[in-house]
Image 1: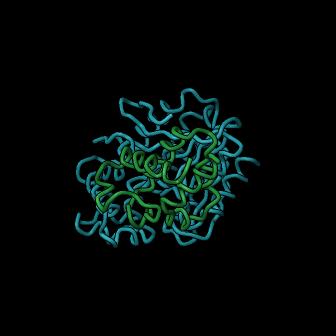
Image 2 (image 1 turned 90 degrees about the vertical axis):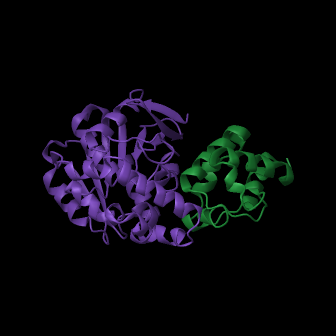
Image 3 (image 1 turned 120 degrees about the vertical axis):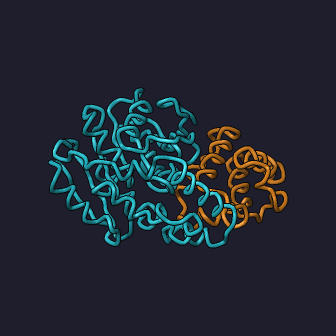
Length: 247
Length: 91
């Protein structure tokens, strides 16, 4: 499988493994893609179950989209991309984690367990994490997270493509407006058993405590790393997810 | 299959994923690195793995191979390492 349609848009989908309780994994916006999971926790989870990962609209190898980066629309994409699955576990990073929270609240029967990695709360704080979102096009490279700056410093192909994509999403789509307008999710209605994973060096960390005290069944675990835990705490992140989903 | 037979298959799959311009510095060699030389994006590497999986079938477990590596090893992968891996799986 490599392509599925949701809300009229072609989505790039990758599946690993088979059997068990399926896991669906959502990446973060702008510099994320399904590769965030494919090169971190995805393969380890796939040893015992089906893992479905996809590129969000406008990201990775999915179709570009001028609008619809709010969690309501992205959760409706998720619904269309999982209609064939029995109840599944849902894992999301950053904005993908907010989509996962919304989906679990709206479709509690579809989700068995939820893993929220570095969800920004309030949602609009995502813009501060992604300083590159509000940078001038020529300054985008300098404002990228540390983990990407090395590859961008060369000024080569990866840098050009990355910056071109950031500029496209910021200038040609409603992404930034969608982020600003996103309401706080009704966390008291989140009944799905949830593991919240945050990095001790991440500016998102206070959101973890907020999540734990606002939703009924949230376990909070703080790992050593920043916002991009799949890069700077890859092994610990993978272990924490597997222990929670298998427990 | 020999390394010399596998290399053009990898090159064709790569061009399919990333376009002709990926070979702007010349044809692939076993020393070419995916990140440093080709500057392939991680999502393109995923697509390349899928394409090669389709081509070579279940004998070649790309995902298992990658998941056993540290992130900096994946980033530093050369075409030669990939070709050698495929060749061993098919042997």
